[in-house]
Amino acid sequence: MAEEEIMKKLKDSVINLDKDAAKEAAEEALKVGIDPLDAMKRGLYAGLKEVCDHYEETVFITDMLLASDAFYSGAEVLKAKIDKAKMQKKGIGVLGVIEGDVHDLGKNMLKYLLEAEGFEIHDLGFNVRVGKFIEEAHRLDADLILVSVMLSSKFPTIEKIVDLARENELKAKIMVGGGPVTEEIAKKYGADGWALTAPQAVKEALKLVEKSKY
Image 1 (cartoon, rainbow, N blue to C red):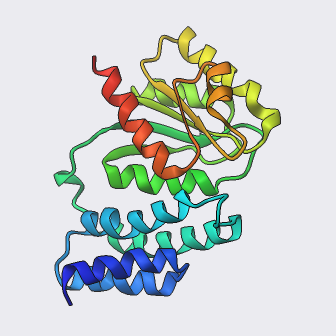
Image 2 (cartoon, rainbow, N blue to C red):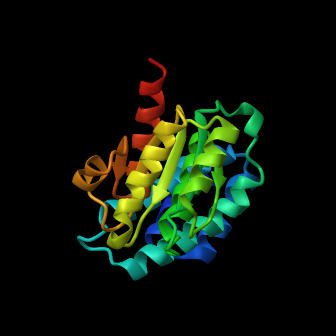
């Protein structure tokens, strides 16, 4: 089977919310010798990005969940075969869902996409206290602190993380995201970056890390 045909199968499996097809296509990709990182980015990632791009227009949260399941199903097959030694490390990120919040769909999706892009991601899980973000960012000398917020009542906690990071003179840029978070909210509470969807967050993360080099 031609490489482009398999890439299309990977992409379509996510768009069609079919996790069995995603796993099967991922196995086919490995069988014919397609680079697993390439398969994840040009196949699964491309499909997930298309679904995310239409979120709130023609795609609903249930579809997002199913698309994520399909993405994870294929990604698990490919991830085990990715040669991390060949990947150019883009940076180190600390990722978690803010204290008092347990919605982690977006966080989990972002972790996969950032790792596929070459980031070393340390996932703190959900209901993460402010100090934990700072402690881990300091310990790892992280480039990014990535905060997921799905409850508007938790917005002030963003400012606490920003203030504590500055008090500790961390180099890490702070990025926030989640359903109710807007660019205006991110700016109001002092975050360095913002994104609505996981694919957009990857682009923003790359920009922030690049900016910090200069």
